[in-house]
Image 1: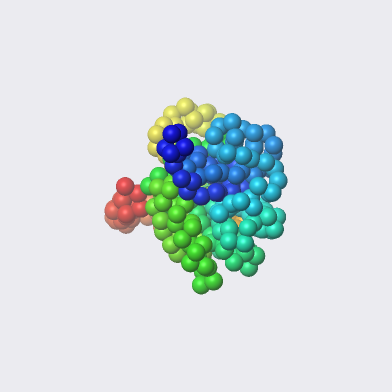
Image 2: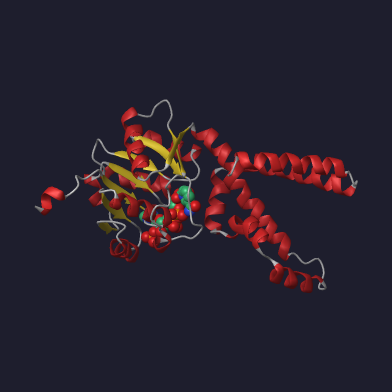
Amino acid sequence: MEKLLEKPLNMQVGIVGLGSIGGSLGYDLRDRHCRVIGVSRKQSTCDRAVDLGIADEASCTFDGLKSADLVILCTPIGKLEAIAQQVIPHLNPDAVLTDVGSVKGPIVEAIEPLWTNFVGGHPMAGTHQSGVDAAQRSLFVDRPYVITPTEKTQPGAIAKLDQLITLIQAKRYECGPEIHDQAVARISHGPVMISSALVSMAIAQQSPEEAAVVSLAKQLASSGFRDTSRVGGGNPELGLMMAQYNQAAMIQCLHQYRQELDGAIAAIESENWEALNQWLIKTQNARPSFVD
Ligand code: NAP
């Protein structure tokens, strides 16, 4: 009787890198009746993932991946290409390979030639905490999941990734890897540097007398500073990877930002309140088109 009530298995999914993103995917996929085969670097992470219910099985070797229909690479960006090379000999010929890297251009360029059934992806949700214990259920619900196929991508690989996106209830977007990188530089990667600069500005001391100012500022900081500094206080490794792997778009975005700041400084210095007012009205009107 119990067997009749069991839901059919949706997919067998391999997750390589059981950290905040890999672990969060594991939770939701198991909740949606997928079998999750985890792989991570540390045995302690593998054991923890199984204990938490993130994976049905987990180990530091790639052997278990041979039964996977879909393998998702969830390691830090700098490790994705090397991990793909290690994973590929263990895949069954029909398996689809994808990654969750926050940068797509160099990753797609490196991995696409290695495996026909590869399609790049980027689930745009995160906790700014790392490791298996930072994994969360339902992290991706209603959040963007960008897929970045090229003219070489197999339709079957896209269909399999679409199935994943549907299962985790994310919102699907599709674009080329380069335009993805330019867009995320503006709203994600650039803001990490801008927010870090904000924190750095707040602790800067030009003279010993300013120590009291910094100390008071720390005590007075409230919701505004919390909102604007949040991404600057995240995992440094992630920010560094964004700059290294999305260098061109990041530089372009930061130059534009400097130009915007220079404009604001010039307006304030020259007491051109009308220009400053117009700039602030423009940004007030534009913000809702990015966030609700
Ligand atoms: P994370 O929490 O640090 O997790 C990465 C995990 O990968 C680590 O827990 C580590 O597990 C494992 N790992 C590292 N090297 C490995 C190796 N050589 N072989 C196997 N496993 C290895 O990082 P994350 O935030 O989940 O980010 C992972 C990926 O998601 C990155 O590519 C990032 O660009 C992307 N992403 C992140 C966010 C975000 O906001 N965090 C959002 C979207 C996409 P061990 O404990 O076993 O060492």
